[in-house]
Image 1: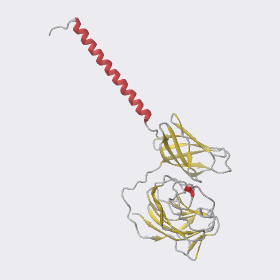
Image 2: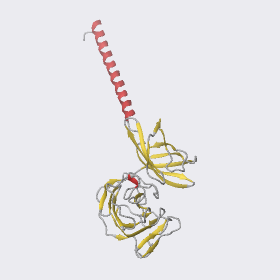
Image 3: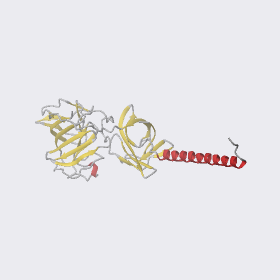
Image 4: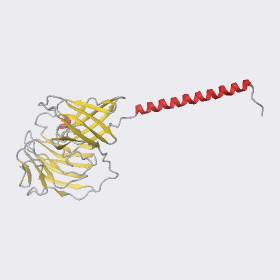
Length: 329
Protein backbone atom coordinates (compact mmCIF):
# COMPACT_ATOMS: atom_id res chain seq x y z
CA UNK A 1 0.00 0.00 0.00
CA UNK A 2 1.34 3.36 -0.94
CA UNK A 3 2.06 5.79 1.86
CA UNK A 4 -0.20 8.87 2.08
CA UNK A 5 1.31 12.07 0.88
CA UNK A 6 1.84 14.95 3.29
CA UNK A 7 -1.34 16.57 1.96
CA UNK A 8 -3.31 13.35 2.44
CA UNK A 9 -2.16 12.91 6.02
CA UNK A 10 -3.21 16.48 6.85
CA UNK A 11 -6.61 15.88 5.26
CA UNK A 12 -7.21 12.69 7.26
CA UNK A 13 -6.10 14.41 10.48
CA UNK A 14 -8.47 17.33 9.96
CA UNK A 15 -11.31 14.94 9.08
CA UNK A 16 -10.81 12.97 12.29
CA UNK A 17 -10.54 16.15 14.34
CA UNK A 18 -13.83 17.42 12.90
CA UNK A 19 -15.56 14.12 13.77
CA UNK A 20 -14.21 14.22 17.32
CA UNK A 21 -15.41 17.80 17.75
CA UNK A 22 -18.86 16.81 16.45
CA UNK A 23 -19.03 13.93 18.94
CA UNK A 24 -18.03 16.26 21.78
CA UNK A 25 -20.73 18.75 20.79
CA UNK A 26 -23.33 15.99 20.59
CA UNK A 27 -22.35 14.62 24.01
CA UNK A 28 -22.47 18.09 25.53
CA UNK A 29 -25.86 18.79 23.96
CA UNK A 30 -27.22 15.46 25.19
CA UNK A 31 -25.99 16.23 28.69
CA UNK A 32 -27.62 19.68 28.62
CA UNK A 33 -30.93 18.21 27.45
CA UNK A 34 -30.72 15.56 30.17
CA UNK A 35 -30.06 18.21 32.81
CA UNK A 36 -32.93 20.30 31.45
CA UNK A 37 -35.26 17.30 31.55
CA UNK A 38 -34.17 16.62 35.13
CA UNK A 39 -34.92 20.26 36.02
CA UNK A 40 -38.39 19.94 34.47
CA UNK A 41 -39.20 16.75 36.41
CA UNK A 42 -42.03 17.26 38.86
CA UNK A 43 -40.82 17.27 42.48
CA UNK A 44 -41.67 14.23 44.59
CA UNK A 45 -43.85 16.34 46.89
CA UNK A 46 -46.65 16.64 44.32
CA UNK A 47 -49.67 14.56 45.27
CA UNK A 48 -51.86 13.82 48.29
CA UNK A 49 -50.54 12.83 51.69
CA UNK A 50 -52.14 11.23 54.75
CA UNK A 51 -50.50 12.80 57.81
CA UNK A 52 -50.34 12.03 61.52
CA UNK A 53 -49.32 14.87 63.83
CA UNK A 54 -48.03 13.85 67.27
CA UNK A 55 -49.48 16.23 69.85
CA UNK A 56 -49.43 15.58 73.60
CA UNK A 57 -48.59 11.93 72.94
CA UNK A 58 -51.57 11.39 70.62
CA UNK A 59 -51.71 10.95 66.86
CA UNK A 60 -53.83 13.63 65.18
CA UNK A 61 -55.05 12.86 61.65
CA UNK A 62 -54.39 15.52 59.01
CA UNK A 63 -54.07 15.74 55.23
CA UNK A 64 -52.00 17.63 52.66
CA UNK A 65 -52.27 18.07 48.90
CA UNK A 66 -49.58 19.73 46.77
CA UNK A 67 -50.13 20.76 43.14
CA UNK A 68 -48.30 22.76 40.49
CA UNK A 69 -49.61 26.20 39.54
CA UNK A 70 -47.99 27.22 36.28
CA UNK A 71 -44.43 26.08 35.61
CA UNK A 72 -42.65 26.61 38.91
CA UNK A 73 -45.08 27.54 41.71
CA UNK A 74 -46.35 24.90 44.12
CA UNK A 75 -49.71 25.41 45.85
CA UNK A 76 -51.90 23.12 47.91
CA UNK A 77 -54.59 22.38 50.49
CA UNK A 78 -54.27 21.34 54.09
CA UNK A 79 -56.80 19.82 56.49
CA UNK A 80 -56.09 19.72 60.21
CA UNK A 81 -57.76 17.50 62.83
CA UNK A 82 -60.79 19.80 62.84
CA UNK A 83 -62.17 22.42 60.49
CA UNK A 84 -62.34 22.26 56.70
CA UNK A 85 -59.58 21.84 54.13
CA UNK A 86 -57.86 25.17 53.61
CA UNK A 87 -55.93 26.60 50.64
CA UNK A 88 -52.14 26.89 50.75
CA UNK A 89 -51.07 29.85 48.62
CA UNK A 90 -47.48 28.62 48.12
CA UNK A 91 -45.39 25.62 49.10
CA UNK A 92 -41.81 26.87 49.09
CA UNK A 93 -39.03 24.57 47.86
CA UNK A 94 -35.58 25.26 49.28
CA UNK A 95 -33.48 22.57 47.56
CA UNK A 96 -35.79 19.74 48.64
CA UNK A 97 -36.72 21.20 52.01
CA UNK A 98 -40.32 22.41 51.83
CA UNK A 99 -42.34 24.87 53.88
CA UNK A 100 -45.70 26.64 53.93
CA UNK A 101 -47.82 28.72 56.28
CA UNK A 102 -51.55 29.22 56.73
CA UNK A 103 -53.36 31.78 58.91
CA UNK A 104 -55.38 30.63 61.93
CA UNK A 105 -58.81 29.24 61.12
CA UNK A 106 -60.52 30.30 64.33
CA UNK A 107 -60.74 33.68 66.02
CA UNK A 108 -58.69 32.56 69.04
CA UNK A 109 -55.67 31.83 66.86
CA UNK A 110 -53.05 34.59 67.06
CA UNK A 111 -50.32 33.22 64.79
CA UNK A 112 -49.91 31.31 61.55
CA UNK A 113 -49.49 27.56 61.43
CA UNK A 114 -46.00 27.02 60.00
CA UNK A 115 -44.83 23.76 58.42
CA UNK A 116 -41.40 22.51 57.39
CA UNK A 117 -40.83 19.06 55.91
CA UNK A 118 -38.94 16.71 53.61
CA UNK A 119 -40.00 13.91 51.27
CA UNK A 120 -38.28 10.57 50.74
CA UNK A 121 -40.12 8.45 48.19
CA UNK A 122 -43.59 7.77 49.55
CA UNK A 123 -42.71 9.02 53.05
CA UNK A 124 -43.03 12.56 54.34
CA UNK A 125 -41.99 14.04 57.70
CA UNK A 126 -41.62 17.42 59.29
CA UNK A 127 -42.62 19.85 62.02
CA UNK A 128 -45.62 22.09 62.65
CA UNK A 129 -45.50 25.26 64.71
CA UNK A 130 -49.06 25.56 65.97
CA UNK A 131 -50.97 28.82 66.61
CA UNK A 132 -50.00 28.59 70.30
CA UNK A 133 -46.30 28.65 69.40
CA UNK A 134 -45.65 24.99 70.30
CA UNK A 135 -43.79 22.75 67.83
CA UNK A 136 -45.03 19.26 66.95
CA UNK A 137 -43.51 16.51 64.82
CA UNK A 138 -45.47 14.73 62.14
CA UNK A 139 -45.09 12.00 59.55
CA UNK A 140 -47.13 10.82 56.61
CA UNK A 141 -47.47 8.55 53.63
CA UNK A 142 -48.68 9.07 50.09
CA UNK A 143 -52.47 8.71 50.08
CA UNK A 144 -53.80 5.62 48.28
CA UNK A 145 -55.68 6.08 45.00
CA UNK A 146 -58.46 3.67 46.09
CA UNK A 147 -59.27 2.79 42.47
CA UNK A 148 -61.43 -0.31 42.18
CA UNK A 149 -60.77 -2.70 39.29
CA UNK A 150 -64.43 -3.64 38.95
CA UNK A 151 -67.83 -2.62 40.23
CA UNK A 152 -68.89 -4.16 43.56
CA UNK A 153 -71.69 -6.68 43.95
CA UNK A 154 -74.03 -5.31 46.59
CA UNK A 155 -75.15 -7.46 49.49
CA UNK A 156 -78.53 -7.29 51.21
CA UNK A 157 -79.59 -4.28 53.28
CA UNK A 158 -78.69 -4.69 56.95
CA UNK A 159 -80.14 -2.50 59.72
CA UNK A 160 -77.47 -0.66 61.71
CA UNK A 161 -79.96 0.60 64.31
CA UNK A 162 -82.47 -1.84 65.80
CA UNK A 163 -84.82 0.88 67.06
CA UNK A 164 -84.58 -0.34 70.67
CA UNK A 165 -81.04 0.38 71.91
CA UNK A 166 -77.54 1.31 70.76
CA UNK A 167 -76.34 -2.27 70.33
CA UNK A 168 -73.69 -2.37 67.60
CA UNK A 169 -72.55 1.19 68.37
CA UNK A 170 -70.12 2.78 70.80
CA UNK A 171 -69.28 6.32 71.89
CA UNK A 172 -65.96 8.00 71.09
CA UNK A 173 -64.78 8.15 74.70
CA UNK A 174 -66.88 11.10 75.81
CA UNK A 175 -69.88 10.65 78.12
CA UNK A 176 -72.55 8.93 76.01
CA UNK A 177 -75.79 10.92 75.75
CA UNK A 178 -77.30 8.86 72.89
CA UNK A 179 -80.59 7.10 73.61
CA UNK A 180 -83.00 4.91 71.66
CA UNK A 181 -86.59 6.13 71.96
CA UNK A 182 -89.61 4.90 69.97
CA UNK A 183 -87.49 3.78 67.01
CA UNK A 184 -85.37 6.95 67.01
CA UNK A 185 -81.65 7.19 67.76
CA UNK A 186 -81.54 10.47 69.64
CA UNK A 187 -78.86 12.84 70.89
CA UNK A 188 -80.85 15.31 73.02
CA UNK A 189 -77.87 17.62 73.56
CA UNK A 190 -74.24 18.01 72.56
CA UNK A 191 -71.97 15.24 73.76
CA UNK A 192 -70.27 12.14 72.39
CA UNK A 193 -70.05 11.03 68.78
CA UNK A 194 -71.37 7.54 67.99
CA UNK A 195 -69.58 4.91 65.86
CA UNK A 196 -70.56 1.49 64.57
CA UNK A 197 -68.63 -1.40 66.09
CA UNK A 198 -68.19 -2.85 62.61
CA UNK A 199 -66.07 -1.24 59.89
CA UNK A 200 -66.86 -0.98 56.18
CA UNK A 201 -65.05 -0.61 52.88
CA UNK A 202 -67.46 0.07 49.99
CA UNK A 203 -71.16 0.43 50.73
CA UNK A 204 -74.58 1.88 50.06
CA UNK A 205 -75.95 3.70 53.10
CA UNK A 206 -79.50 4.88 53.78
CA UNK A 207 -80.02 7.17 56.76
CA UNK A 208 -82.84 9.46 57.90
CA UNK A 209 -82.46 12.41 60.25
CA UNK A 210 -84.23 15.36 61.84
CA UNK A 211 -82.75 18.47 63.44
CA UNK A 212 -84.10 21.54 65.24
CA UNK A 213 -83.45 24.97 63.78
CA UNK A 214 -79.78 25.90 63.71
CA UNK A 215 -78.48 22.47 64.74
CA UNK A 216 -75.56 20.66 63.15
CA UNK A 217 -74.41 17.06 62.80
CA UNK A 218 -72.68 14.89 60.23
CA UNK A 219 -72.39 11.35 58.94
CA UNK A 220 -68.76 10.24 58.54
CA UNK A 221 -68.22 7.66 55.80
CA UNK A 222 -65.57 5.14 56.91
CA UNK A 223 -65.16 7.51 59.84
CA UNK A 224 -63.10 9.87 57.63
CA UNK A 225 -65.31 11.78 55.18
CA UNK A 226 -68.04 13.97 56.69
CA UNK A 227 -71.36 14.25 54.89
CA UNK A 228 -72.89 17.34 56.44
CA UNK A 229 -76.20 17.28 58.29
CA UNK A 230 -76.82 20.95 58.98
CA UNK A 231 -79.61 23.49 58.89
CA UNK A 232 -78.52 25.75 56.03
CA UNK A 233 -82.10 26.59 55.04
CA UNK A 234 -83.07 28.63 58.08
CA UNK A 235 -79.67 28.93 59.78
CA UNK A 236 -76.77 31.26 59.12
CA UNK A 237 -75.36 31.23 55.55
CA UNK A 238 -72.54 28.73 55.15
CA UNK A 239 -69.77 28.40 52.52
CA UNK A 240 -70.96 26.34 49.57
CA UNK A 241 -68.82 23.33 50.54
CA UNK A 242 -69.92 23.46 54.19
CA UNK A 243 -73.69 23.22 53.79
CA UNK A 244 -76.44 20.62 53.79
CA UNK A 245 -75.46 17.45 51.84
CA UNK A 246 -71.88 18.63 51.15
CA UNK A 247 -68.77 16.54 51.76
CA UNK A 248 -67.36 18.97 54.30
CA UNK A 249 -64.79 21.32 52.83
CA UNK A 250 -64.52 19.47 49.50
CA UNK A 251 -67.67 18.70 47.49
CA UNK A 252 -70.68 21.04 47.43
CA UNK A 253 -74.14 19.83 46.37
CA UNK A 254 -75.31 20.85 42.91
CA UNK A 255 -78.72 21.75 44.36
CA UNK A 256 -80.01 22.71 47.80
CA UNK A 257 -82.50 20.03 48.83
CA UNK A 258 -82.76 20.79 52.57
CA UNK A 259 -86.21 20.70 54.12
CA UNK A 260 -87.39 22.82 57.03
CA UNK A 261 -86.06 22.12 60.53
CA UNK A 262 -88.19 19.58 62.36
CA UNK A 263 -88.96 17.57 59.20
CA UNK A 264 -87.56 14.10 58.56
CA UNK A 265 -85.00 14.03 55.74
CA UNK A 266 -82.87 11.33 54.11
CA UNK A 267 -79.54 10.62 52.50
CA UNK A 268 -78.72 7.70 50.22
CA UNK A 269 -74.96 7.41 49.82
CA UNK A 270 -72.85 5.17 47.59
CA UNK A 271 -69.13 5.07 48.38
CA UNK A 272 -66.77 3.02 46.18
CA UNK A 273 -63.10 3.75 46.76
CA UNK A 274 -62.98 7.55 46.69
CA UNK A 275 -66.01 7.88 44.44
CA UNK A 276 -69.13 9.14 46.20
CA UNK A 277 -72.73 9.70 45.13
CA UNK A 278 -75.16 11.47 47.45
CA UNK A 279 -78.94 11.50 47.00
CA UNK A 280 -80.54 14.06 49.33
CA UNK A 281 -84.28 13.75 49.87
CA UNK A 282 -84.65 11.84 46.61
CA UNK A 283 -82.48 14.09 44.39
CA UNK A 284 -78.88 13.35 43.34
CA UNK A 285 -76.79 16.30 44.51
CA UNK A 286 -73.29 14.76 44.20
CA UNK A 287 -72.78 12.30 41.36
CA UNK A 288 -69.78 9.92 41.39
CA UNK A 289 -67.25 12.52 42.53
CA UNK A 290 -63.78 11.98 44.03
CA UNK A 291 -63.33 12.72 47.72
CA UNK A 292 -59.75 14.07 47.76
CA UNK A 293 -58.93 13.30 51.39
CA UNK A 294 -60.04 13.14 54.98
CA UNK A 295 -62.21 15.91 56.42
CA UNK A 296 -61.91 17.62 59.78
CA UNK A 297 -63.03 15.38 62.63
CA UNK A 298 -61.87 12.14 60.99
CA UNK A 299 -61.03 9.26 63.32
CA UNK A 300 -57.67 8.72 61.58
CA UNK A 301 -55.87 9.28 58.28
CA UNK A 302 -55.58 5.60 57.28
CA UNK A 303 -57.54 5.97 54.06
CA UNK A 304 -56.66 2.54 52.74
CA UNK A 305 -58.40 0.76 55.62
CA UNK A 306 -62.12 0.06 56.25
CA UNK A 307 -63.80 2.35 58.75
CA UNK A 308 -67.00 2.75 60.75
CA UNK A 309 -70.13 4.77 60.13
CA UNK A 310 -69.76 7.61 62.60
CA UNK A 311 -72.48 10.12 63.45
CA UNK A 312 -71.65 13.43 65.04
CA UNK A 313 -73.25 14.30 68.34
CA UNK A 314 -71.17 17.23 69.58
CA UNK A 315 -72.84 20.07 67.65
CA UNK A 316 -76.36 20.17 69.04
CA UNK A 317 -79.52 18.02 69.25
CA UNK A 318 -80.09 15.50 66.44
CA UNK A 319 -82.36 12.51 65.69
CA UNK A 320 -81.64 9.56 63.37
CA UNK A 321 -83.69 6.56 62.26
CA UNK A 322 -83.95 3.88 59.55
CA UNK A 323 -80.19 3.38 59.14
CA UNK A 324 -79.36 0.55 56.75
CA UNK A 325 -76.23 -0.47 54.84
CA UNK A 326 -75.43 -2.73 51.88
CA UNK A 327 -71.83 -3.83 51.68
CA UNK A 328 -69.96 -4.16 48.40
CA UNK A 329 -68.34 -7.52 47.76
